[in-house]
Length: 185
Image (tube, rainbow, N blue to C red; front, top):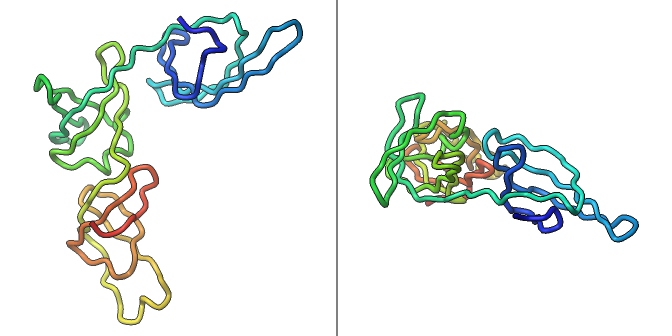
């Protein structure tokens, strides 16, 4: 059990029956030795963020979030299938959990899934991935003087802005958090 004053950014707790991660934390001392704790908490099941205020005597249960390594196998349009690398069990996740991570998943990729009560609730990707350019307009001679950008469709369907010299078939490094071109792979 944790008191409100023991909360820290990144700590995971149970609040109203759901797992939350502390996103921001601010403690203020009030008269007669008490304190008030203001936090912003992210619901790990829904992704929503809420502000809350607690007294220093409020108590929380620490959330038991387990992170496991899985191999990405395939998707059927609605569900994405992963295999636990330790016991070879397969799990499927819907788009509600996968979200925009779908643009960075390629067959055989290793991903980290967070589980709460034995159920996957979140996916963690590497900070950057390598994807192949499937479609992009050709660069015109003399375009490089302006340092311009053009759209490129990658192997997973993601469309990003890339430098004009990038061609179809190039392998690019892409940031999974910002969806920005980082360079050639």
